[in-house]
Amino acid sequence: MNLDLALLLAQDGIANGAIYVLVALGIVLVFLVTRIIFVPFGDLVAYGALTLAAIQEGQRPGTIWLVPMLAVLAFAVEAASLLHKGAAHRLPRAALVWLVLPALPALAAWPLAGRELPDLLGIVLTVALILPIGPLLYRIAYRPIADAPVLVLLIVSVVLHFAISGVALVFFGPEGGRPRPLIRAMFEIGDMIVSAQTLLMLACSALAAFGLWLFFERSIAGKALRATAVNRVGARLVGIRPGVTGGTAFLLASALAALSGLLIGPVTTLSYDSGFVIGLKSFVGAIIGGLVSYPGAALGALFVGLLESFTAFYDSSFKEVAVFAILVPVLVLRSLVTAKPADDEEDEL
Image 1 (tube, rainbow, N blue to C red):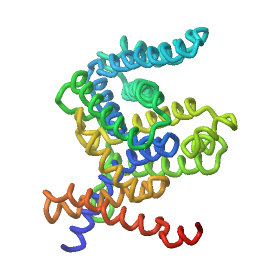
Image 2: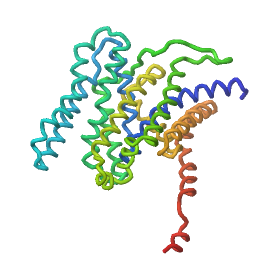
Image 3: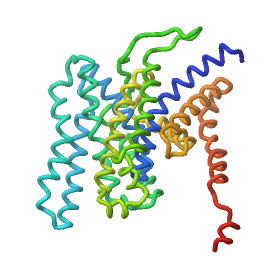
Image 4: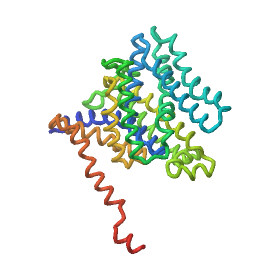
């Protein structure tokens, strides 16, 4: 392997890593606030790309039907909870929050989708349609079991992924979709040709990582969100409402998923089931970064992209094996570094 070839492989690895960075940030965001490993995050990314592709093709995207359906289910769950608590007087507010507001983007998109629209309007409609999905999924599947162990939440996430991907097959069909690039320019850097879309992905990944780190580490609101994951009972005692913080985390995750779909879609063709593999590889990057650090998750995801690229050069059949196998030494190393020796525990006792 010469230097030129290594640079080309590094360029491809960084481009793939930029995809994984955006998804890894969303996974870490949800985990830090709710202790939920949000496996379906990659599916929301695919929803964003497929929605924009459908709008640009003059079709009505499947999310126009999906969002109202989820809104009805979320309101039914909330209404049952309120009636069980004897708080029927709060039903009108619940209908506004869980039924009317989430359905508004779908109602607005119905007369607009299906015709030629400016790219900017298509992007706005896509973001508006994806935003309610995260909070609605949280209310339907996660909030009723918010105090469950992490393993139970993980099992629910896996089940939810299969449900979401199945719904995507119904609404979007088996064919993939690729929206038009946001920026079509190409740049020459030395002997390499880099698309402006890839550079935009890298820039947005860096800004998202820094922005999330700044918000959760330096702001009172961010620390309040993180306090829910550390101790839900203690958070309640100091006036933090875990249900609200969980919904807020999933709203932020939906926004990040919509942004990821807009940026990733023009680079690679996504189909109804593409999000799962992207989510798994991003999860590996998040674990390499510690699953608690946004800059760490970004660096870990870039490492996964580079590892995948260089492994594929030697043997493409082993690129997935290498990505998932790297978890073993990483987890062993972390267990050795963080585990407390048994002898020290006995001495303290």
